[in-house]
Image (cartoon, rainbow, N blue to C red):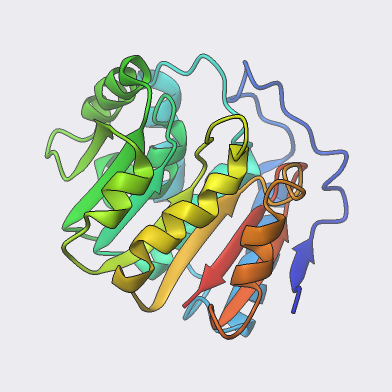
Length: 247
């Protein structure tokens, strides 16, 4: 069954992808929109509560703006806050992020456990990027905010990394691109590769649930089937969208 949270202005809320740090709305408005989405995730049993440290999030945001080299990103300020908040609330001990480009999407997840936005201690936070030069840049970016090495980026195929996991997985973030035939459809392959490792209650976040919905049709149908995932909600804060599913 399709469930969704849709912000009233999702289709008018736009960001310049090469200027991701510009404020697009008053902070209280951003907080309210994200809080409403979190409340729905709580009501659907995906999250235990909707409370997170706003000041820690702002410290995380400031560090990324100051220290990361980001040529462009599709992660809007609303999406950045939502992803950080989900991780801060769920506190995954093991997190895998597939398709992290320059590391901005990865640190939006990992920043709840490392750097100035940290609110809990994780065991392993791994970002995967198939292009070696982008993986190197992402790793450089991450090292500027996380000297511990708990969060790290590797150059590899995410399907292979997911299939080789030898530990439980508490949160999976999907933002990878496959070959011309699969495109974003590779999300399904990555999830299938590590599904056995995803713990009961484990969360899967899939970016581009709106603008790439056609390519993601098989993936979305699968996660929205209660025989596969306990619940799934399409969170539409902007034109990209984020499908949030729980096992």
